[in-house]
Amino acid sequence: MRGRFPRQPKVPQRSFHVKKGDVVVVISGAEKGKQGKVLEVQRKWNRVVVEGVRMLKKAVRPSAENPKGGFVEKEAPIHISNVMLVAEYERRKNKRQAAPSGT
Image (cartoon, rainbow, N blue to C red; front, top):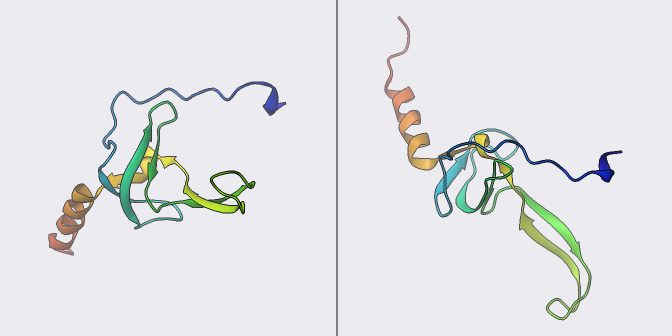
């Protein structure tokens, strides 16, 4: 009976480490390693929409703006915990490479 009640929002985080326009890198999941600009932050759902990441194809009926119809590709949201600012990612990557290995 999932469809009878509206989906409840999760408790939003107090602060987000990214905002609209930031360049981020995906750190986990199927899109790991991809970079893009944050297009939208969905605070209510703890998710962000990143340009060029998690592209979905949506079927569209013919309309005035799209007379043929067909498929439209658009970005889907991903969880905020799966992204990191590129500057922070590079800093951590360089720190790991500079650390001496072994004991």
